[in-house]
Image (cartoon, rainbow, N blue to C red; front, side):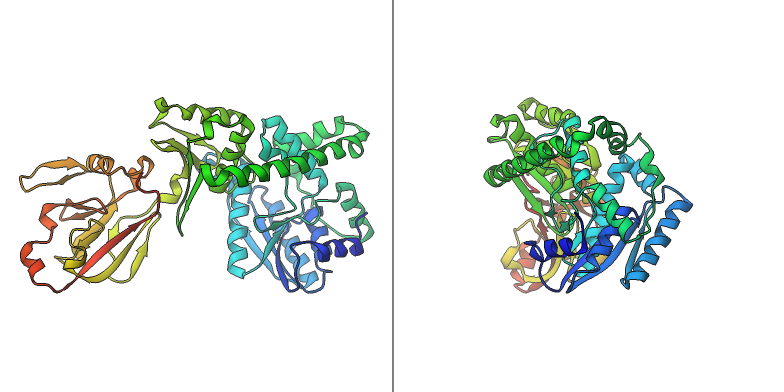
Length: 460
């Protein structure tokens, strides 16, 4: 039974709880999140505030939800943070379903807000019935171990304090405390998979759901969590190489042992990599899993495929790389005149050094004509650079290939242009016209230079 007392005892005894904890409560205005807010506001030494996400999908109804949540915050004396985005437009521009787009943007914006506010957790109102629905949907979609683990009570800065309680318990609590809440009419739209399961699949299971199915699901959940944890700790360090900087992530799946693993383990590895890049809680479908396995063959080198969440899988010589093109976008501009500037997978640092120190290092470019005369931009098909004193020119992409630049990064790789000519491919080659002469070297004095540092994994 869900009561204030039992909930308080559960929170105070949880492994993640500590005094003065700060929690951001995701509140839609529906019954689950409204009950969660009511319960958490009764916990001593717990700092809370509310975040509400307006998907702009239901016109005036969405605005009324926002007004209701604002009133809830006022009644509880807590701050409310409002986020509003056109999810329909975001889904269409990124090739996502409304469910995927909403989930992705909520998680991303909530995480950013939590970090900006220096909070410890985001709390959401999923309950035991949501757990059952999730696992059944994952089975229907063709899940692996990751999907059978369901929803975690505490993971990745998210806590779900109602996960041990049923929808009926939450309803009874709401009625007892006379809590008002909003009803989302779109929850009746069975074109959404979860709504379809809730309306048509769960009811057909009959009245025994609380006795037999619930205990079975709980058993699957516990065993799958344990097995999935073993998989992650045993093979992730070997087969998943994560490269992360401030701007851009990618996951490289090595093929040393992956093709030989038992299929559920392969699926768990792919799920883990996909979730890390997409920020989506679910793993990949059976259809995408089979497509990814087709990239194991050396005949697939150079091929790529699209996954949900605008994630691209690329087969290079070393394995399969998962990345998002949007993470690597950057704009053409002048070279920086001081300090350093960060780009998606590299940074440019403006420094002063003696020529003798790094004169032959292709990561350095010496300023000979004034910084305002150089342009840094992405390489394009058709770009060429003169590579010797006889005027021989080579395609920039060929220069990159010889240097073993990761294939998926070629279209984002930086080059420097001077008076309409490519004169530097950072970290690889400098045009003869801009190399340091012996005469300048003999001056033996410091010069301004640009240094480019690349993210690990830029070169194969």
